[in-house]
Structures are given as C-alpha cells and as structure tokens.
Image 1 (cartoon, rainbow, N blue to C red):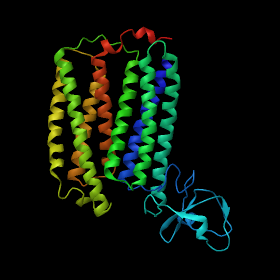
Image 2 (image 1 turned 120 degrees about the horizontal axis):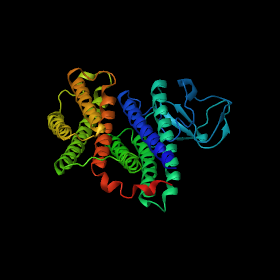
Image 3 (image 1 turned 90 degrees about the horizontal axis):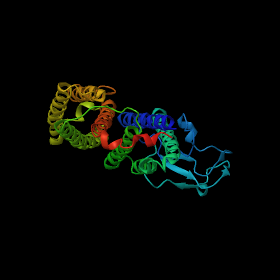
Image 4 (image 1 turned 90 degrees about the vertical axis):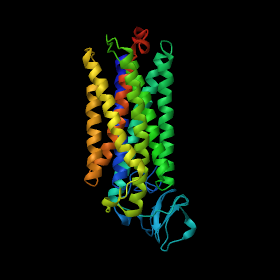
Length: 348
C-alpha cells in the first residue's frame, strides 16, 4: 500500500507541474481566452475547430449552454431546441461575464489541453485522497494533507474559472499561480513523509539555517518575479504579442530588484552547496536545485537581453516552481529526524 500511495503522490506532483507548464504556455501564446467560458469551451465538452461552428445555423439542434457568436457577441442557448429558418433572439441570452467574443482555433485548443491536464491532475490527486484513508489509524496527518491537496485542487479549479470570467485579470492569474505552489508544497510534504529513503545524514545547525535562508530568499524572489510577470502581462495586453521589444521598455524598478536579488539567491545557494560538500553530506536533490537555479537565471538573461525567445517565459515560470519544490524537499530531508519519526508505522 505504501509504495502505491507514494507512486500516486509522485504522479500527482508530475501532473501538477505539467499543469503549471501548460498554464505558462497558455499565457505566453495569448491563449488564456481561447475558451471564453468554464468549465466547457464555447459550451462544448470538445471545443470547435473552426469559426464556422460558432455561427448560427438553421434547423440545427442546440443544447442548453452551447455558445454562438452573433455580431461579435457571445450568445448562450437558454434550453434545448431546434433552430428555425430565421434566428430568434428569444432562444438565446447574452454571455454577461465578459465581452470577449473571438475565436482562434490554436488558442482554443492550447487552453483546452491545459484544462485536460488540470483534469488529469485532479483525478490523480483524488486517487491520492482515497488511498490516504488507509493511513487513518497509523498517521492521520497523511490523510489531512491529502485532504488539503484535494481541497486545494478544487479551489484552484474555481480560481481558473474566475481568471476566465475576469478576462485574465493579472492579479487573479498571480493568485492562481500561488495556489499551485501551495498544492506543490502539500504534495512534496506527502512525498517526503512517505519516502523510504532514510538518510543517515547528520546536518549541522549551520546547514539547516542556510537551508531555511535559501528557501525564504527563493520565496521572496518568486514574489517579486510574480509582480514583474504581472507588469509584463499588462504590457502584452497594451502592446500586443508582436511588440516583444516593448514588454520591458522601460522596465519597472521591481524588475531591477528581481534581477539583482537573483545574485544574492545564487550566492547563498552556492555557499550552502559548498558547506554540504565540505562535510560530505549526501543530498542529491541539491545538485538538481543548483542546476535548476542556474538554468532559471539563464532564462531570465535570455528574456531581457534577447527579447523573450520562444519558450523562455514558460520555462522560467516552470523552473521557479521546480526550484520551490526542490528546496522544500531538501528542507524536509534536513529535518527528516522529526519528519520520519515512527516511519515504520507507514508499512501496512
């Protein structure tokens, strides 16, 4: 049972990261309103592939909630009905949550795939929640954190709806991302809690303190980075996807703080890595943390100096979330004596 539960936590974590990456791709391709309604897409479970499918059609069977575009406005079917030879407004009601009424097949399917990834992640975390019930007598916190994960996924889905309803309000996009990191944190904790890797490392107080400082600095850096991304989103809406050179011209002060702060982050992490190696501690995860951090800084350099080359923006966001997860897992390993107390009680 333990191996199966641990396996599904890992699957859930991978799928959540895929959703984070997909969400970043949605934003960088301008596909966030590819499906203007939620949870369906233009009122369909499988979205349309061409604009003509959203035109009104005579003698056509429409179902409640299906969407058409009339005079560049969305109209929603009030009920199941078969259309007559002429369009009748009485069968339709306007979509009032926003006035976005454009169709782009590429944007629609990018957003739809993002939602599919989210649904798969939701199924995986639901399995985690069900499997966790077998731990109720042995370790209740496993059940509690599994419940937190599922509640978080439900809240995240609702946030996704509010993002669409708001026509991609930057602050709501940021809240959506923050919630994703909370879900990652819960899953990483569960993954560490049920890991069979019982490290014999005895960490010094200095390394533990450095680990905490490095993690806090990463949280600060992510917070500043989120504000920079909000600024870029506003610039994209104002200048358009094609005017890449104007997205950070002029760059706000928060961008320069974000850029300079990255030097402090990498120096602290490099110093921590040096101390780990100095006393021959075995924390393979920190090799990955440094690699992710270095690549993260590289993508930041590419975005600023080379006008956001393709894939750098979503990769930058994904790497930030991976760095967050990797450092959290490292911290949990540092304090694994408390984490895995009575770890034998997980063997059922």
